[in-house]
Image 1 (tube, rainbow, N blue to C red):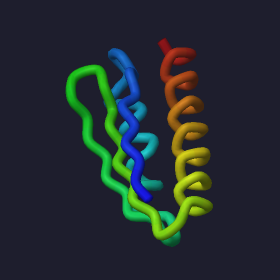
Image 2: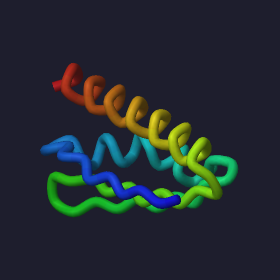
Image 3: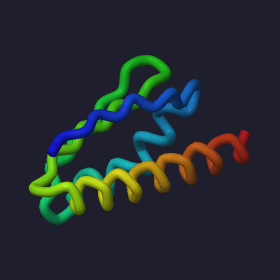
Length: 76
């Protein structure tokens, strides 16, 4: 199971990437993760052993990204 996420993070891409980096580096059980950024977009590539693991990782990373984005906006 694979998923790719392209998040439009705007000028806060670096802040969101920095917030997610520890989670990407620590890893998620049964899921291979890669993160990259290009301009105002953040890309997450996930490859999981099964659908349940993929769904859990997607839910977690989408939640963390939304939280990081909101914190960065509130800090402006």
